[in-house]
Length: 614
Image 1 (cartoon, rainbow, N blue to C red):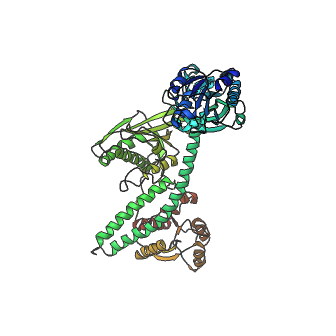
Image 2: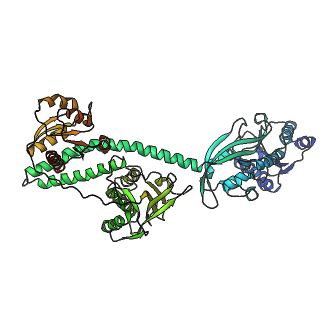
Image 3: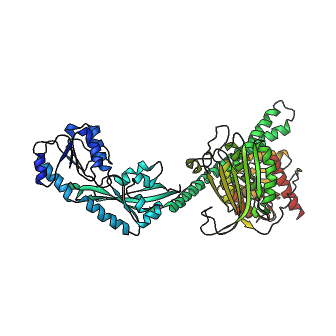
């Protein structure tokens, strides 16, 4: 036994009586002796060593290859869970009692217990590791060898920190080396960095291994750690949480956009009316500024609706290659000369069913994001190809098997950290300055892609650029996009029933329609509209919000048609999905908010002319 300090009178004889011998050294030399003597009991006399020296000796004892018990004589208790003494006795203890306690500690045979458990661990079918009290690996099962991508021969004797790898290993110290009472296990999920740099999430359940009962002075031998790879499960959980969070944010964004569209309808419409009525007014330039700002705000609400999936796509089937080529010409002007655009388009037709305008919006937003990541310029690569996804494909994990059109947008910019990657699709999240962006661009991209039944995945490394993968289901039959219908805005004298629950929007629409020669009866809800309808001998058109309180716009139109069977209807709403639920018939039209004067007038004239032609 190694004794750091001067043994008390009679201690040598007491130790000899229980079959132990003392080797006394000065406290200053004890640390070196503890590291060179091999497995042996170390006794530290606090009377001959200060606190720093004491814990240095305890650490030296526990740093050996096998369990090396350490006894402290003094009042000091645990300072660090990893370098905790195995036995602490008071300085007044009698030599015979100290010898008895040390003998009892050693009689529990910790080394034999450790060897027996090492053999047991090696036979387990599950991933399991045995960690000595020193924090070094004492054994592992074959499943653990596969999990940690190592062999037991190379791992045994190494520290548990080296087994885990990575910078965050120290935070899991308690899971591998903390002394326990023996009646419970501890668990936690750790991040393991393999020698190949692959990162795995491993759930560990650890229990202390004791020689003797812990509450009766037993010796802490080590820790048994059962491990399981939860990387895939955590990825699925993360995707589910992300999807749920984005879905909730989408509902919030849609509600905000709906209310904001009502305000924008009034702002833009009133500015247009004033500019039309007072073309020579000195404040005409201010009105144009109001319209410009309102139009920009309308684009923002459109992006919110895209993100919330309430912007109904006008889908056609088309080849993405010509669309990407055409978009690249516009992108060159948008991104500037410092950004070099490279296209790599596979041969053959890459057909998708999508809204061409929204798909172009995806490219624009990704390209602008890439430009901002390359403030000094660089290369922007846009690739497109048809890919076959089969079971086990890496990207993306939730895509069905089959043929997909994959568009890859890659830059060589600043890249993003893992923390930023987790948030990039969240609305209003941005790393840019207050005046450089709203944080909606990538959330809009996410909403558009999901709206089209597609998938999006991103990889990035700080300082090495970012790569976005966008997948759309491939289709084989292509059809041309129908030509847009021309709108006519001639005024008439027809009678219109206007139903709108927002007071400002209702007043604005009334002024607009009456200013162009229509006879308008404005009401605020469906029951009022049904109450006044019998007073009409003739009703030429119903203009109604869909989401009315009490009676919806679609129900109102159905009930009014019992009196006016051929009544044409124009639905207005900020919730585009309500238009889809309405299942518009031949005599029905939908106009999205914010409603400007030219838009509503053109729609009214078209609906009336179509009704007269029937």
